Image (cartoon, rainbow, N blue to C red; front, side, top):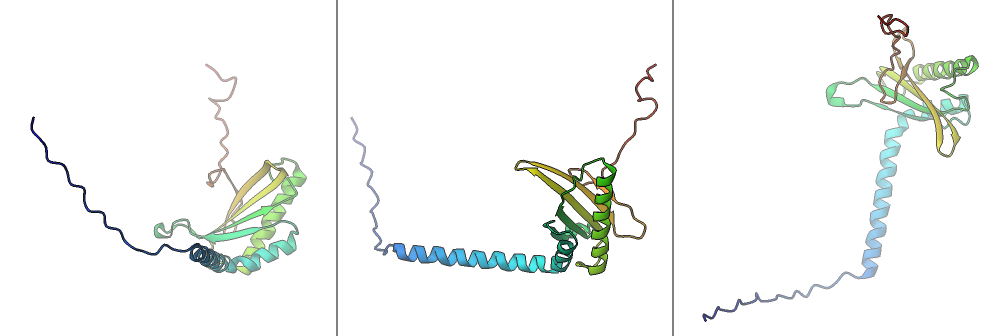
Length: 181
């Protein structure tokens, strides 16, 4: 039998680094938490400050509406339109077909558009989106969204779930029931 040479184990090098104490770890965690909080507060303050006058005007006009106002471009590098989005809580069901509810939603949208034109939170707003929701129970919500191009004579257009303009297609005469050949 041939004898194979034994593999020599590499020498173990022990470093004498002093371990980090628990007190240091706790202090560093507090410092990291304070820095993260300060960063988020600064970011949100700078991001939402231009919209505060409009948000406060909406609260004065519609108490209890809890509006959230945000705006900008979806993709700056693709020259997308400047959009102002407003999410607002309502006591009126935005999906209701009742004439009184539809009139209330139209009034809400028109007042928001007028306030937006008056306060101009963003220069060059091209589109206004209003997202209205009504909370029914903990897990139920009714919502509807509309878009208005900020040009003279533009009409409100409903938005679908994906945020694109909803179009209503009426059935053609050939596809209507009872027209089978």
